[in-house]
Structures are given as C-alpha cells and as structure tokens.
Image 1 (cartoon, rainbow, N blue to C red):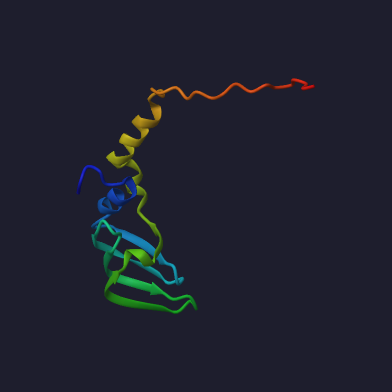
Image 2: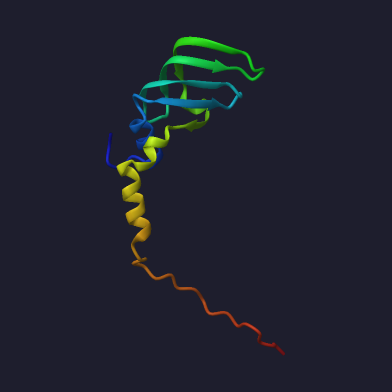
Length: 112
C-alpha cells in the first residue's frame, strides 16, 4: 500500500479478511469473504452467494470481480473506526490555512 493511495481504496484493502457485499453495474449482488483486493478495485471473493437480478440465488466457491464493473461496495461497520478516518477527521478539524479572496459585490445598489 502506498502513502498516496486514496482513502476509499485503502479502506477496501482494510476490508480484506472480512465479509463484504459488492453490487455490479448489471445488477448482480455478490456477498462473500474478501480474500484480496487491488488498487484498481479488482476483488477476489470466496464463499460467495450470488443474487441475480431476477432474485435467483447461487452459491459459488470463488469469484473474481473486475473493479470497473463495480457499482458500489458495502463494507462491515467495524471499519468505521479505521485509523484512515482519523486522518480525514484531523484534516477537517484544522482551520483553513489559506484564506479565500472573493471580489466584493455591490449589493442593493441602484445603477443609473
């Protein structure tokens, strides 16, 4: 994991070894154990239950999901206390160091 990695990708890596839910762009939903994830969001899942768009369910031993086909991922609640969010919270709590200058506008003035 590099230091410049985005928070969502780093959070996905933190989810390795836990059960997650992945919905694809075509509507299929995969729920299983996240064995491995890549920076491109490619995921390898094991002990998967596939819910098709028509509601049919199927059990699969292993699945490899391509990251470009993922619509969203549901991670466990446990990860909301991840140290990654501490860094984000500290950035939000710091006062802005740069002041934004905006042009002054003429409000409620009548022009001739």
